[in-house]
Amino acid sequence: MQTQTSTMPVSKIYHPLRFRRSTIATIILTSLAIILAVLFIWPFLSVLAWTLNDVDASMNSLIPIPGRFTLHVYQLMLSRYRFQDYLLNSLWTSIAITILSTFASALAGFALAKYQFPGRNILFTIVLAVMLLPLGTMLVPSFIVMRDLGLVNNYWGLILPTVGGGAFNIFLMRQFMLGIPTELMEAARIDGANEFRIFSHIVAPNTKAAMGVVATLVLRGAWNNLLWPQIIISDNAKQLIMPAIARVNELGVADPYARIVTPAAAIVAAIIPLLLYSYTQRYFVSTLTGALKS
Image (cartoon, rainbow, N blue to C red):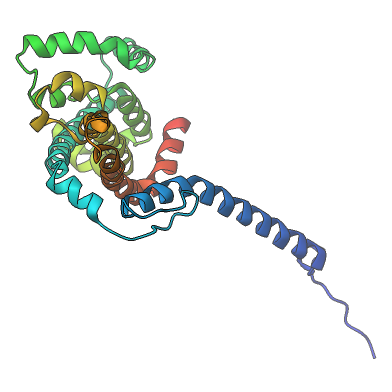
């Protein structure tokens, strides 16, 4: 009887040793990732447990479990310190800043990527140079301009400086829009579409991921901004959430509840950026990779 020989390639043959090595490596890497994640999130859990603990109850600071659960700190945050007003101020100003800055960055990036005009390369070089400037060098000129315009202690003093879009956001949008085929725009022009229609119907739908990343970065910056609102807004009732947290924290010596309330307010203030980033994180890697390749 003639025996049949196996024709399976050598690379397809089952190798127990290779399987064990792959499984062990996966287990080790997963364990390291879990340990690092726990190390990073443990301080946050400890602070959260501290805000949920009764003031009179003892709690081990190394174990994020309240000794006696209570929401008294959050009740003080809303009733005594009125942090909900500061949250609303930050919310609407951040939304306005995000919309205007994202739209301006998209238009500027579109012009630098798809239009040929004198001085385009020089203008793009200036944008890159602005990215290298420290923030502190622009505070005094910006304040002088806002003062001369009568926008000190006015929310427009926070919103208008962002209409330019921001150097990094313009750079990101320009790099991403370089990958959009110019033939699509030329075909639309032949069909009679104007430039704004080309931007709204062709460019914008193809740059949703990049615009989402820019909007996330702008919203995070506007929400977490501390120095500029402190300079522009002098009325405590108009203040934003981050300057309000800093101001209440400075009352710790005279007000015994201030140091307890500020961690709770910081946790509440972090919810919106965390929710937004959790929704847009899948766009970050692809958008930044596409921008760098361009």
